[in-house]
Length: 397
Image 1: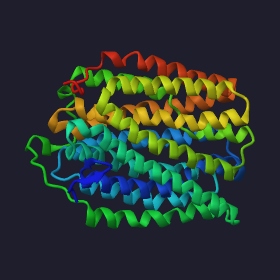
Image 2: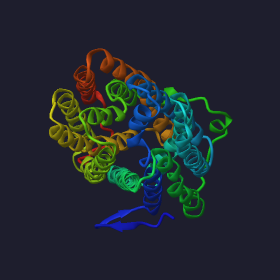
Image 3: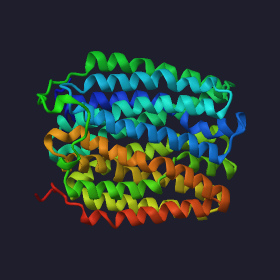
Image 4: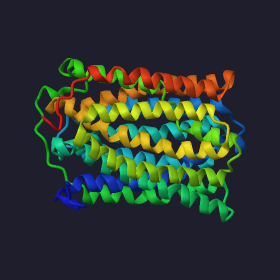
C-alpha cells in the first residue's frame, strides 16, 4: 500500500497513512496504561518518585539503544518491514502484563519488554516513511504519523477512564489493553508493501555503524538533542505533579487524553510549518516553548493553572516531533537513513536514564520547582546550539 492518499489537498503516500494507523492502534493500547502507571505504582504498589524515575528512565534508555541497533541493521537488509512487525508484536504481548505485577521491579521488567518492542520498530519505521516521501513533504508526513499516534493516545485514556468509572480495577484495565494491540500484526503483515532495496556486500556484513559517513552538522544536532533530553524527563512526572495537586486518577486519564488532542492537532500543523518556514526556526520555537512550560509547571501552585499549562504543553510536541525527524532525514546520507535515525534515537537513549533519575532525585531532595527549573534551563541551552546545525534543505532552497 503506497498509492498516494489525498488528505485536505495533500498527497500523502499510502505507506505513511498505514503506518500512522498502526501507531494509532498501538498508542490506543499503550495509553490505556501509561497515564495510570504513576497512580498504580504509588497507590497499589507503594512505590515513590525515585522508583518511577528508575522504571521510566531505564525502560526508555533500553528502547533508544535498541533503536540505534535496529536502525543500523535496517540499512543492512533489503526490507525494513520484518523489524517493524517484530517490534509491534513484542510490545503488544508484554505491555498488558503490567497488570499482573505485585511489586515495582516486576513493573520494570514488563515496561522494559514493552520498550524493547519500541526500540526494534521505531528507526526502521521512520526510515520507511522518509524513503517514500519527497523532501519537501517530510515534515507533514511525520506530522500525520505523529498526529495519528496521538489520536490513539486520545482514545486510550478515555477508554481507561470509562472502564474505571464502571468499577474495573487498574489491573483489569491494564490487561484489557491487549485488545487493540491484536489488530496491528495483521494490518502490517497484509497491508504494508515495501519495495526491496539494493544492499551492497559491504553493508550486509554486520551491524557495525558507519559513524564517519555522518557529517558534522548531524553530529551537532545529536549534541543538542542529548542536552535537551537531559532536561526532558518522563512525562509521568507531570502526571505525578497533577496527582499531588489533588487531581483524581480518572480525571488524570481524561486530562492525558485532552493533552493528546492538542498534540494530535499540533503535530500535523507543526510538520506542515517545518516544510514552509524550515526545520531550524520551527524546532527552536518548540524547545523555547518547552522551557517556558516547564518553568511555569514548577512554579505555579493553583490546580486550575497546572491543568491549563499541562494542556498547553502539547503544543511543544507539534513544533518538535515531526521537525526533528524531518531534519534527521534531511541530514542523513541516502544509504544511511535508518542508521541516522538510530543514532538520533540512541542519543535520546543515552540521556534518558540520567534525565529521569536526576529529575526524580531533585524532586525528592528540593521539590518539583527545582526539578522543572532544571529541565527548562537545559532546553534553553540546547536551543542555543541549533543555529550551528546546517539546514541541508529549506523552502527557499
